[in-house]
Image 1 (tube, rainbow, N blue to C red):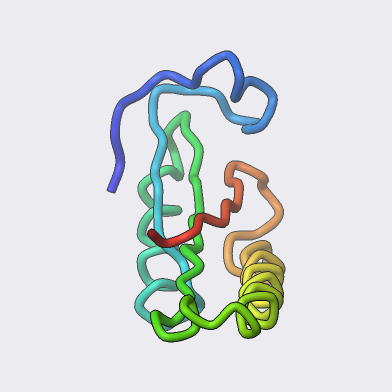
Image 2 (cartoon, rainbow, N blue to C red):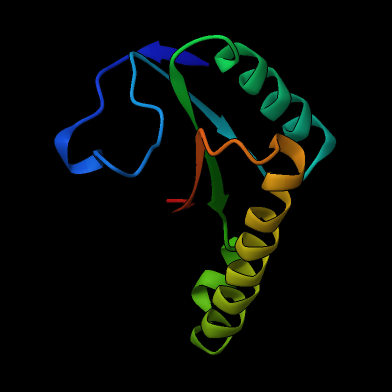
Length: 106
């Protein structure tokens, strides 16, 4: 769940707490991902470090073959990512030691 790492110069300023610890957790809004998010937050608490919350957008396989469905699916995944990002401050509080990232499944 966590690794000891250095923040690269291009990431400077994107995380308020710069340190040796960086916890990365996947989040899809499920109860299991909320538990993982809280566990990662507890790991970082009391340490110098940051949390990266990642949502992996995965389009259904059959939809990837249909060009007409691509934009609709992309819009739905965009909305899902926005909704998930808006929930995180409620779950983690106001202390901004985290950032949200959306990744595309391959």
